[in-house]
Length: 299
Length: 269
Image: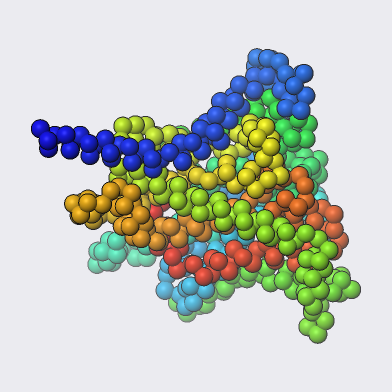
């Protein structure tokens, strides 16, 4: 009887400590994530301005319908998609190559690891101004191109080159992140596998194809999802480069920048929330497709 | 043939390091150049000077911005390390009703982009009077689903026997967590520290939303506004960019040996 009591007591005590451990998280997400999420969902069906409550009224699906004919939003969605399609595969391939390189027996391995990773720990704002400087019309890059008799464009100020320039900058500054995660994956592959394959006479390339790549599948999935989610949220570079305008001619307008401008410059907060939910759904769908493709290997 | 390949391989390896480090080196050099030499690519070592750094620190609130960024990043980082490991530990090792549901919530929230809640969060914070305050810049960001997920994965890898022995010795769950589990978690905590600190130090969207008076700017917001007004003075803009990049780069170089280890032990896979 007494033993039963203490068991019960211990169980109750454990449950209570469990709640105590998760309490800060629960309070925090309730106020700053789940609450706002519901709030955002509600106001996405309203004409809503925080500054001018007089205009607040229900508009049903009007905000969502308006999105389909909003040229700026369509442009933002197109730019973000191009950005994502360009950045994600390039980034992952370069990251995988770099991870293989710094995992091999090269001299000065630690130096190269650090060198390749450094752009990743750097502020996007700092990277943006540094690239604006390097790629300005009479900057270092164009001077180098001129040596090869190439007339460089005005990069960030050119409608055709502004988005690709941001893409290049994004690849440059985040490859290291994915490299380190690939590297961790590579180091977890049991060396016995390679030894066994070598005994069987598999060459380096076959070993890469038959051992490394399949073993890296879960990591590949993880990186792919992270990279996709990250690229669809691009904001900082686009903001700094265009000083918040998305210009030239909306060439650097991204979905998040459009949300930011609509919500906090035009104070059209209901409409901005509708945009945000479209972004949310896109990210959700991408994640779910990816998860299906890779068959739940991650969690 | 093999030697030629090896040589080409090293050219690639070194070449990519030039691509990653070159921009920083060029911006450091530019930040040391006097304005009169800005329009030339030549570097006159005799004339290099720290004047640009002095200038932006004396004439503009760069020191204040550095202080704001450091304060905010430290508070947010330590809040996350504590709260995420507490929640992660409970999800890994404490039995309580609703645990699986809560873990599903964590996984689901990892998919919610922060920008979705920009508008409501701004409204809540301005109702609280927290726009342009340290409260507004820190309190909403003290926990993270992703951080909790990582810590949970790590705690699952700690042998259960250690905790069972401690329970027999009469330690409570809190005692076990603070005295046994946390000391064993240094690599995971180091990884969290690097991710959280750099993420927060570099954060731009939220601080630019939540601050409008320039003495409350964080360094990225301050640098962006400085660039917007003084973009002709590239040497001073570069000095600001270097002030912004140096702390995270130095921190990474110091902590880098924990890094790959931390990532593989937190089970990012």
